[in-house]
Image (cartoon, rainbow over all chains, first blue to last red; front, side, top):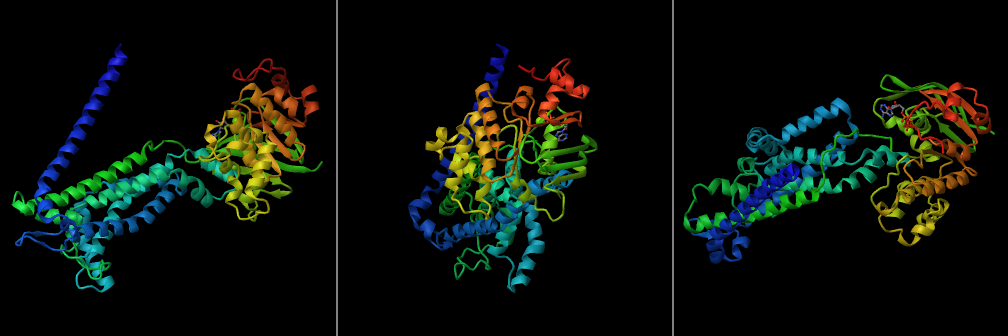
Amino acid sequence: MFHLNKDRAAGIVLGTSFLITMALALFILAFLLAESLPVLREEGLSFITGQVWYVAGDIYGALPMIYGTLAVTLLALIIALPLGIGSAVITSEILTGRTRHIVKSLMEMLAAIPGVVYGLIGIALLTTSVRDLFGLMDGNTIFTAGLLLGIMILPTIMTLSDDAMRSLPGELRAQGRVLGLSHGQTIRRVVLPGSIKGITGAVLLGVSRAMGETISVMLVIGSLDRLPTPIYNVFTSGQSITSKLGREGAEGLGLGLQWSALAGLGLMLFISVMALTFTGNIIRGGVRPKKSKNHEVTG
Amino acid sequence: MSELFRLTKTSLYFGNTPVIHEANLTIKNGGITCIIGPSGAGKSTLLRSLNRMNDLIADFHHKGTIMYNNRDIYDKGLRLEGLRREVGLVFQKPCLFPGSIHDNVIFGIRHIREKKKEGFKVIAERTLKAVGLWDEVHNRLDSPAIGLSEGQAQRLAIARALAVGPKTLLLDEPTSSLDHRSARAIETLVKELGRTMTIVIVTHKLEQAKALADDVVFICEGKICEAGEAANIFSHPENIETRCYIEGSPPLDPTLPYPE
Ligand SMILES: Nc1ncnc2c1ncn2[C@@H]1O[C@H](COP(=O)(O)OP(=O)(O)OP(=O)(O)O)[C@@H](O)[C@H]1O
Ligand SMILES: [Mg+2]
């Protein structure tokens, strides 16, 4: 039958692209693993715990970069999480009609701006403001990078959280209101719990974007392969895995242990980002933006 | 009997179209008032205006006054949440929250600081008993409410509304999506509730109105054609449209279920 054939064709196309994607991911994983074996064999655990990255001496400790990546990601999250969810609440639950549409389109546009543009704006405005605001010698700091990343992933978290809240049926909101809950109570007790999966997924995707972002971080983080002292002092220059790869990737290509160490960094990043993206998408699951009236009252 | 609601020249609009046009109506305190009329007449809209649930719809506005207990419900000083807790409403399709049966029953009181004299458990048991659901669910209060049948879900929705402690309960076609037996259970329940509180119920089914109503409001095309005591209206409908509707010939709306 014709239908059956069409369904089968679609199935074959989907199945093939899934297999290709999986194969590609496995290939990258195997490649990175194979390339990083030398450094893992040479450095062992101190590849992760070592604080010194010294190419001339063939010493490769990645801790400053691991720290940098975690620090900028965490900072980005601290900034983007409350703001992103807060503004999603505003666009999804408070604004209506044209205003909502305009704000939402704007946010979607911002989410699509390439990292390098943010990076340039970061250099131009953020580094100097951070320097002046906190009285620093140099505005290229881990904090600056985290701040920039927070601004970058804000639109992503916001639009995806907005989608998650909008996909909640309007009747649930009306049901909350009709039982005597205020608008705010309904948001807290009905909307947020009801869309928590989609929001979590949105946040994870945002975090994975922050973790994998390279250029903009490279431009403002200061590129210093050293742990700050004290360890929580993020107002010093640092290095993230991506900024390290961005700087040394080309020059280290194929060069013995340095290349292997860079591949090792790539491996860590790849696994983390893949895990976050995968989990984020799984949790988001059935969340699809639904075109329904926000406050449908009739049951 | 005293009057509970008084609508004076009340018009209800979605956008520029009036769905209810200059309605004058009083609803008595106590007993059961049935709102009947053909599909699209504006029954649900009228019902929802009694506790201002239409206000959630973006392009809704109203003219005229709606008094509740001699107080304008659009009065600046009136607390909207307080009004809705006093005038409960159950939607046509039961809309249960994700979560357990227990969570659903106490949803309206859990998040309100006032009234904590009784424990949630006590209130849940009392209201579930009131709607005749206790025997069926008392040993699975913590299981998801989603698993209930339509009839059970509707009774749970009524229990949830009752738990808030309303003095008036508005019901919008509570039996429309139910099978015959579940519908009868709800009718019995409504009749029972009508003894202790004011019930305003929208219904399509003439039989149901005849069985339940103390008073009847007949609406067609956004106008109140007739309102008054059920016995009078059913035996001597003054208005030609009412008579057609009640006698069922010719039906105003072919999609109407024919009275059995
Ligand atoms: N949210 C809305 N926005 C615009 N128009 C609406 C809205 N809700 C209802 N209407 C319109 O108002 C009119 C009355 O609707 P209402 O739901 O009150 O009728 P009803 O008598 O309850 O009908 P039914 O018996 O089918 O439930 C209809 O023409 C409907 O299309
Ligand atoms: Mg209706």
